[in-house]
Image 1 (cartoon, helix red, strand yellow):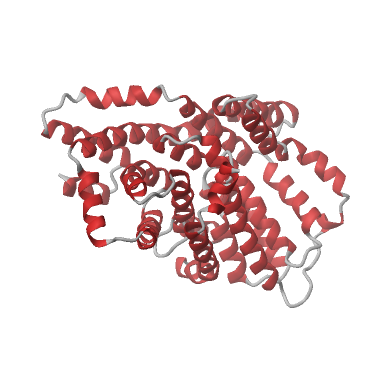
Image 2: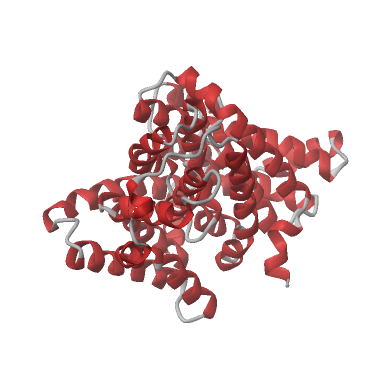
Length: 416
């Protein structure tokens, strides 16, 4: 039956149908009432943190449809344009900021690519450097709060989401720092061509962008101070952006809101069905002792935690390349958690390793999703994007090894 599911997936059948089919058939084959699937979905609906996902998703779409990307790019270049390689560093930080809020790298490449790519070319950065930078930067912000994948991992792995938010800060900054240093090294031979925005006074740009740049600080400060819960922060973020972008700045007309709601919630419907079905299927796997069998096999062939981490990284990179991030989290996390526990890998450290792999996998040839989105956005052949991304991927792999083998990078903020 697994072969049937693989065949369905290969034919392009939506993943929520494939996973639901697997779950229903598995329980039917061992004579368990199929209502167990709906019981699992009801149990999922009672998860308090789950309500945060639709509100953060909608907030991200609101940002993408406003002029916020233009304002943030203008402000960032005005602040950092004087640095060696400043424009490239601006691109890195703006992409990370935007991805953290939207939770989707494809949205970042589409929303910001048209602004940043011409600017990099005008500043005489090499074309391959510019394409590789923007392609791999599309998923950099997924380790920063309020990233949806962090929230989803916390729900699936049953670990505190506020601790995950803290754990992702240092690894996320490490990725940005390494790529920033590389950007400085790759600065054009002659000084960057100054754009007009760099000559504008900073304070008007700060005033124009203050509404957006304050969002992460309000959310993180409110959640970690205990003033608001995660779900309350998500609602606050949505209401705040509606007031700013629709009422105050009037950049999103009221008539456009239904279309934005449909686009954002259409993504969530499939995620929720996959999540409920896969959690039910996970219970089936546990009942059939599949994780125990997998653990016994690995323990028979791998006796070192460090070798296991290498194998796990290779596996997760392949998953990140082949499967979208939300599906990978929902389907794979329940299988690798028992392995992590058996080899004494902290579940929060595992989460940061997991998401870092998926970040990199999004830009890894041959079929990383970022590569195809960038190919369409920048109108360049996919093989051109492969070549352009290789230097950045090599640096990200080095960071991945550091994050994997130095657990303190992920755990120091939650244990101090």
